[in-house]
Amino acid sequence: QVQLQQWGAGLLKPSETLSLTCAVYGGSFRTYYWSWIRQPPGRGLEWIGEINHRRSTNYNPSLKSRVTLSVDTSKNQFSLTLNSVTAADTAVYYCARNDILTGLGYWGQGTLVTVSS
Amino acid sequence: QSVLTQPPSASGPPGQRVTISCSGNSSNIGSNSVNWYQQLPGTAPKLLIYTNNQRPSGVPDRFSGSKSGTSASLAVSGLQSEDEADYYCAAWDDSLNGYLFGTGTKVTVL
Image (cartoon, rainbow over all chains, first blue to last red):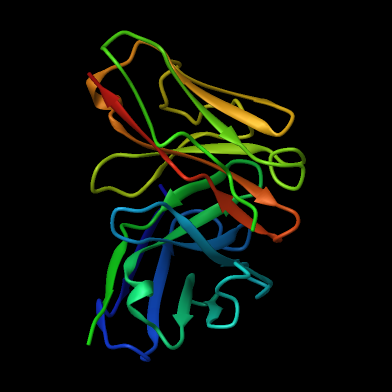
């Protein structure tokens, strides 16, 4: 059974750095891309980016300048860093496993990140 | 910027069939497969349909997907109260080199 468990700071001030980590339990870490998605309160889903075990990445062009994805294959974990956050970055952030054939089949529980002064 | 357009809402009484459309372009739906996600209130999204019309194990056959050209659709037959949720289409976009979600459709069971 595949499980994704995520954690990170839930309250940030403007200009600070958002940092979240997602641990993968079960399944093969090396077979898939690992994605981050966010959802502002009351709004739709926005894909942030993805990374694989070789550290190959794809980013949403609208966030690319502020986003860094990283991976720790020894721990089956991957992380999201988002710089210079503003109130517009307030959202529930999800990690997910991306299978090229079947899509985002496994999701983390979500982390609410609030940016407020 | 590329966008996948869905109607904001859809509704029907129990037992009815509801269809949700998803409109894209040649760089996303026109050249890549479509997935659908169901998001129940307060929960993480769940994969509902992959590769246009395939159901993951455990998804009832009341849910079906189709794709034609640059559009896709999700049909829910025999609507049940537990189907009240937000539904999102999604596809890879070759121009953005990224994954694109639809605008989302809220389904209400009357």
